[in-house]
Length: 226
Image (cartoon, rainbow, N blue to C red; front, side):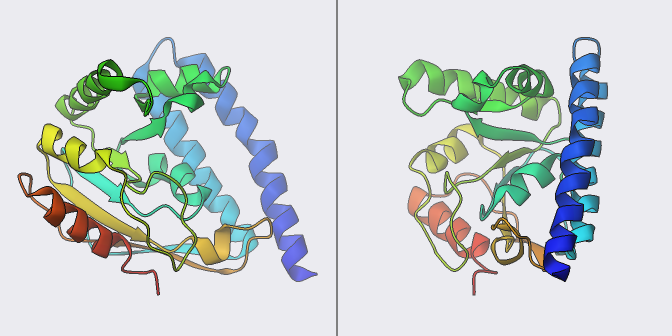
């Protein structure tokens, strides 16, 4: 019963509070990208505050580097996607292109600086994605990607998406692997009290062969996967 009450408190707070941030984001987006990013970051931190009602807390191990880097993040639940704008410093996340078609949200996400990934649209889409990613780097924003391409249940390892190594090669920036163990407490309808840990790996320099970068990232992002 306590678990149910905690979850009801979380869902009520988050879903009744979120429209305020969504409407604020849409209101400021046409006039100020900086204000839009601030609203999105506040919404993200609001989500984490709401999680405290469900007994979920977040801890960080290691140091988050600053500057133009590519954060390669383990993806176990929606938690890390929602948490990214408030956790990383003004990030530009990669996201599948289908999300850009969501009315209102897709437009605001584009204004925010999302880098859209159109996996099935060939070379022109790939070139456009690289241009957008490099533009974000030029603005001093770190990039955030889920290299497995989808949510992976806690305890499982999956190969990285085939395009990750090519992206790493073309961007020419360090990769920072980030392990996250959000699955057990978050990836379920009823959130369970517990701790979600972020663990930052050592930055990996650009220019490594495909086999090495994939192996090092795979190992690092699964460091909490026991």
